[in-house]
Length: 207
Image (tube, rainbow, N blue to C red; front, top):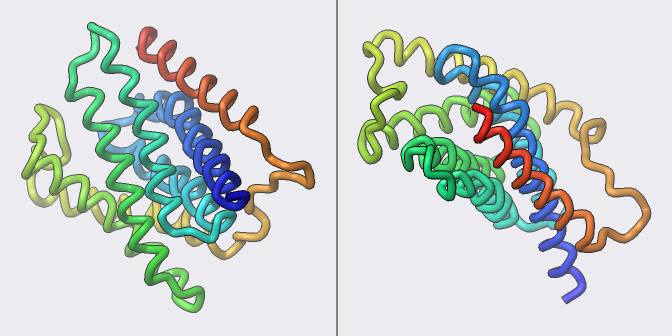
């Protein structure tokens, strides 16, 4: 029970921190051409998911962190000015990212850091593009580009995301999330979650 409680606290904290990054850095990066923000936000999301997995020693924590971060995005559905697709699109991206990182954690070997990093960087954007094309079909999406541009973007995304992931995994101890010696209570995760929801709500009203 004690370990279960610690895992839940870690999942909420990592998911909320990811949500804060999505609601701050993510909104800023959306001023870039469509699709470019994911090159940077996926490695950020992977950082929080992978840290939750390492701290809890549970690969399923990766999926739960993704669900927490996605749930923060779904707060936007409460705003009448937001179209459902403008909320579903980023929330779907977060969930797909968690599925890709979960699969990555299942097969990852440290002796293949570079290859694994570029593959996971390619896999998530490919899966996201296919999901857009085959299921949601938003008016604006990567799948609407000419095929040559789609391939070029997939490769560029893999290179940028993969390079950032290589840097992280090769320096994992340096970037590891440190909780300190004090026991992590539910106060910090709960406060962080409320902060993430507040930032997401305010930024949605502004942008």
